[in-house]
Image (cartoon, rainbow, N blue to C red):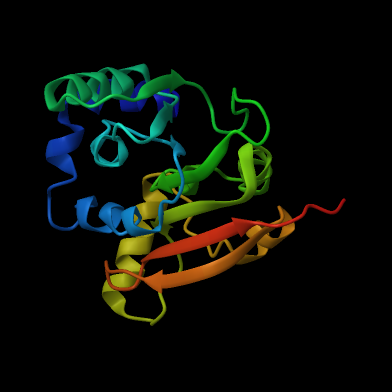
Length: 202
């Protein structure tokens, strides 16, 4: 069973699951919001639309992308219930179906760690960002301290199929320069990274 199908199956329960203390992600997701800039925003891996609905406003054009139709169905229900407007697109972030230089910000929370090879994804993000556009990432990665609890959490992430990583090198290789980084929580296994599009040199 592929990953998209798995997310399709538990999409109706997703919002309940992420409220469980050990896996709860809403606080960490919300840390991305102050760093989102511009009027044209793309969220990749938007899930059930929790963050998407908080970014949506009359002054912004917001697009949510996910490879799970089930997740997008839940996002559509949320947007309708909250009377928010955003475009929803079913696609893979390895091949973003948008023209180059389309977005001021790209947001990704707990979605990039699903990719075994992250560089092609960052190259796509670089492509769709406007000049000086930024990518805002919240995701799992190596713990800053060697706590037992952190090692256990990282093992759980890996068992779920995630790839906890430090994105620094891959961001730089894709022409994205880090302007802000912060450790969030989950025993130091979750971090926030903000990077800006730099002139790309082959």
